[in-house]
Length: 256
Image 1 (spheres, helix red, strand yellow):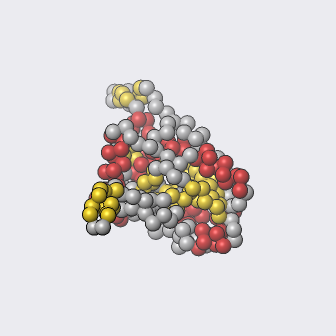
Image 2 (cartoon, rainbow, N blue to C red):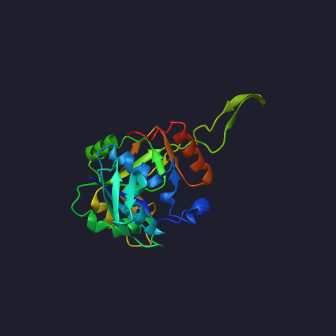
Image 3 (tube, rainbow, N blue to C red):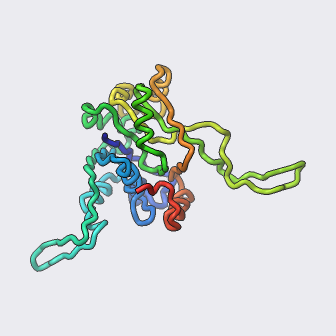
């Protein structure tokens, strides 16, 4: 099975770093968050990736073109113009990098890679800026079992702020970032039939609006409820949180 990853957005809310690189190339523990996402999928046996590039897509292409330089020790023999790679840390990955345009919206990016998916029974699809310990193997099994065109992973994000525990105005304690209002939201990590791409009109189509809504109206969209860890990286504060979890060996998404 293939996995399509959106990696073309501007990442304006974390502009401290994205003025130099695309958002999926922002590093957590010295590795791009894109690498972490790919390692998550690879742990579940998915090693064929299609990366939808856009803003500063050349940075992503250069990263994979020079993957050994990033992941291994190397010796450059200048006199003989050779490079020797030591302790090769190769991944079993096939990575297709597709320029899907700088201004293209999420649905349009998916539509632009349709030719790479036409022979697939189903494929995984996610954003290039979110980490989770979602069981991708179970997610795929759930998708196959219900037999509809699309599956979205539903998550319940924590509240943004801590809450006071009150009893007649007396503070009894604090609850650190309790669950929000109990509603489920789109956590990414989709499994889709290629037929879902027919619901996308073109570059100006956002995957989260008409395509998903129309799939739902037709009874073709099911939600896989994930109760574990899920964290997007939209802000510098969220990047710092992910960095802290990784540095303290407490990263729930590290399933490899």
